Figure 1: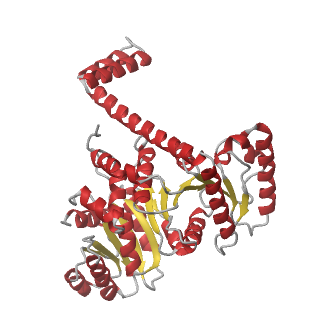
Figure 2 (figure 1 turned 90 degrees about the vertical axis):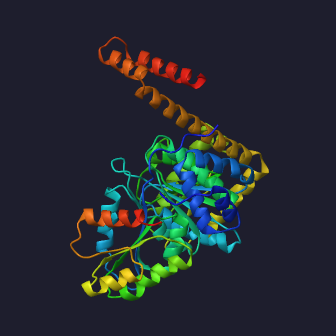
Figure 3 (figure 1 turned 180 degrees about the vertical axis):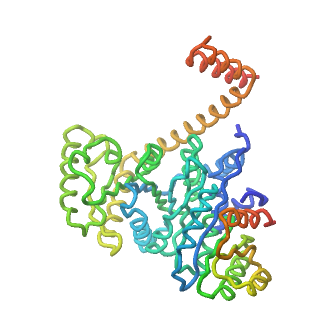
Length: 139
Length: 326
C-alpha cells in the first residue's frame, strides 16, 4: 500500500552565512526573519564560515539556495569561490549575495555565476522574490 | 529539491556508498512523506535497526546544541560515527522556520553530519518524518544517532522519549523541588544533565533531582524505567563532564543490550511510526469525505441543528470506510 503523492510543496530550505572575517551580521539576521516569515526554512550559519563548510552544510541539509551577506569588500573574491566550490562538488545550488555591493561589481558577480545581487534598501518582497526565482530558474 | 529529478534507487545506492549529498537527499524524501517516502522505507527497512538512538531534550536555552556538539566530538574520538537530527519549530502561521541549532553544534562538534528538521505543523508529520530520517541515517552507517528537540510540546517530548537513551538537560536556578516532581519531561529521563554547572545553584538542582529520584524509587517509577537515572554535571562551553556523560550513555546502551530492553524500545518506536502512518492515512481519507457531497451534507445538517457533532463524525467515518471498500 503506497501513500498518495504529497500534495503540498515543501518549504524552500535556504542556508544563510557570512564568509571569512566579516562581523556585520545584523543584515543577515534581518534576512533570516524575512525568509522565515515568507515560509522558508532558514538554516542559519551566521558569522565566520568557510566556503568548504557551507558546501558541507548544503549537502547535509539538501538546501535549495545559499544566501551570502557581504560587508567587507571581499565579495569579488569570496562569492565566485562559493559558486565554484558548489559546482566542483556537483551541486547546482544557486547563490544569492546581499550587502554592500558597488554597482560596478554587479556584472562581474553575475558573470561568476551569482544568481542575484541585493543591495541596501532592498524590500522584503525583493529579497524573497530574488531567492525564489533563483531556485525556480535552477535546472 | 522542488524541481530536481529524482531517481530514488540511484540515490539510495550512492547514500549506501557513503555519499553525504545523497544521504541529504534521502532525508528530504523521508521528511516530505508520500509515495517516494514509502518506497524509501521499503528499500531501507531491512538494512536498519542497528544504531543507538540518543534523545536530548530540555528547555530552550539550556545549552543542548553546544552539549550535542561536544558529545559528537566525544563519540567520534571513541571511534563512533555519530549523526545529529536537530529539530526546531516551524511557524504555525507561515510554515517558515529558523533552524539555528547547527551553528552551535558545528562549533563544538567539528565535521559531524547534522540535519536540521523543522516541525512543519502538519498532523503527526514529525512522528513519521523522524523515524524515516533515523532509518536513513541508520542504514547509511551512522551510529549513534543523536536527536535534539526542545522539551516543550507533546510531540517534541514524544520524539525524545522514542530514543533508546533519553537525556534530559536542566539548568541551575530554573525551579525547585516541586517543579522537579511535576509530570512530563523529567519522567522520561534515562540520564539527567545539569548543564551550566559552573552556575552557583548547580548543586541545589542536583539535590532536588536526587530527592525526586528517591521518590521514583518509592513509587515504582524507577523499576518501570529499569534503573535509577544518573545525574551528570556538565559545562558545555569548557567540555567539563562530557566524557562522563558519554560513558553514561554507553553504559545505558550496554544495560539495554543485556536485557531485551533495546528490542522492546525498537518495537515501541516502530509501533509509534505505524500508528502515525495509519493516523495520517485516516486524516487524508476523512479530509476527502469532508470535501465530498456527503461531507457537505453532514456539515449542513450540523449547521441547521438536525444532527450533533458526534453524529456528524459517525457519518464522516462511515463514508470514509465505505470509500475504502469501493
